[in-house]
Length: 263
Length: 263
DNA sequence: GAGTGGTCTAGACCACTGT
DNA sequence: CAGTGGTCTAGACCACTCC
Image 1 (cartoon, each protein chain N blue to C red):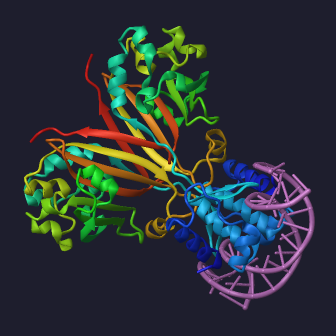
Image 2 (cartoon, rainbow over the protein chains, first blue to last red):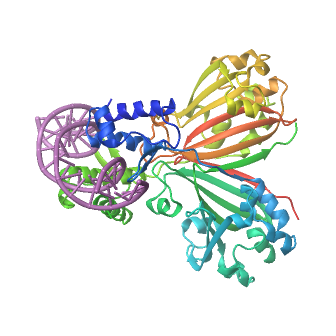
């Protein structure tokens, strides 16, 4: 076993044992750790790199290496869909109170900041064309949403929603970024187009963030992202909307409930 | 911007542009890349480390650095639960045909290899005690399952299932590792104890693998794991079983369907 | 044994943080 | 300005893969 692995293991054990609490600063790379482990700087840094990649340690330039604190979780439940559907036909006054994100996080609208960007001339790639059962290159409306806590700088998710352009022309609000976030969410918007949803499918995978995502979501080494594709089917089984959300893996818990029929 | 970042960006762009195809070997670290970028070995390796952490490049000791190929996905659907419940009361002959994993992967039992390990004296920690609504320290039965493709060395998942020990004493098969995998799965086993499930809840998060998980699941730098907690409630709303599965994030797609009631 | 990546060293200098 | 982490170099030697 390499020296840097032994150092990483030793530090990991000492952290787990509580020698340093979450938030505490570890001994300095130079001279503390290099002399303690009788090794060179590179080797100490390689060991700390392992722990950072595991999410055990936060490296902060100019300040030190810290034991990472567990972060507050955002829970996203599958009940949100039925809840959103039930609310889609409520009065605007009612709808204006809260959206699905607030339903999940338990926060008021005022705690969250939204940002919307539209692109009404996106061409369907193979994946989207396959979902919507349309030719590649069909014109789509792409809406990008970012949600963040008012006190934090970085958004905690980035969502991109796709609709077939031809189907949304009937509602000009759907093409106006300043109308965001609409009271009622997507299901209310689809309702104005005469579309009722019958079923929602969600597909979840995980991977390390790309450099771009790390930048955008303020992720550190040792973070993963959850990729959630939400596909909304109308009552005839056609795809009405497809969207994907990028969620920080360690801050997000996705909860699904499957009711079972009685024997 | 640091030199290693510029090198990583340059290589990333060239890979995306198709200069090297998935599976192709990149130029050697020494002397090709060091001379091409007029830099030292460490700097080239730091750049390649970035790409490896993103999952773009596979580093293979003694052979080279390769453009990573997308891997075959295993799909896990939430329909499996109802399917498993419907099957739990079928004859053993029928049940013996396939299990829920085969239902998802579309493979025959003979393509998969299972491994089961039991520990009938696990003490409930705070998380499990909270789930089952029992005192911390209550005796639990922990069953660990590993599933892998017959042709591959590493399992593609590791699952740990927890049952309250007192409730399983009625069925000695539940305490015998050699009876694994039982035809019918957990729902069939619970059926023999007179327990019928009414609802299943699944909670999903993602994070980088621990050193132990990388070892066990054969994961490389640049992989994430999905952690799925499955909580099974009986028809009275009590927790009957809790289990967690560790799934390789880039090989697994979890699919959930939410049916919506009609307006 | 040749080729290739992995580990380690010792030292220089840069960049960020807080006093 | 002092303290601390980040980048980079040049070179030595080890470990793995494949012919």
